[in-house]
Amino acid sequence: QVQLVESGGGLVQPGGSLRLSCAASGGDFTITVWRWYRQALGKQRELVAHITNDDSATYAESVKGRFTISRDNTKNILHLQMNSLKPEDTAVYYCNADRYSDGAWGSIWGQGTQVTVSS
Image 1 (tube, rainbow, N blue to C red):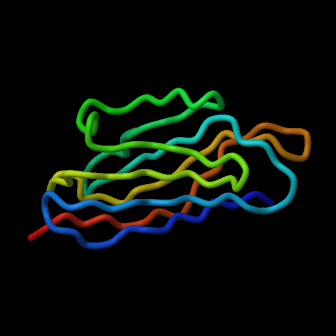
Image 2 (tube, helix red, strand yellow):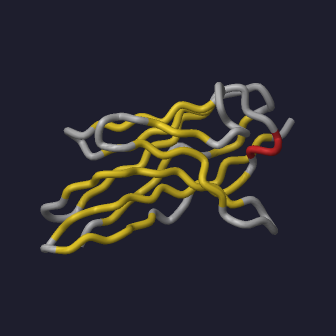
């Protein structure tokens, strides 16, 4: 069974940086699209960025120019480099992927990692 595990969250001061990672493992699979979502307390989950197989990336307006999504296909790892962090970036960050395995397509989620931006 394919699983996603995030890492790299933590507490950072405004203006600081963090790098999130999401590793996929478990059997024989192919991932086409990777996404990062976030959910702040009391708010709906929102799409932060996504990246396709050909490395085409799209970002939410609120993070453009500050966040960079990247993927390592050989290791099945997704990254999110977050710079110039703001308090409003505080949220639980989730990775999500469209995967093909065992003859079927599906969407899988990680467990989330907390990012807190505060002085």
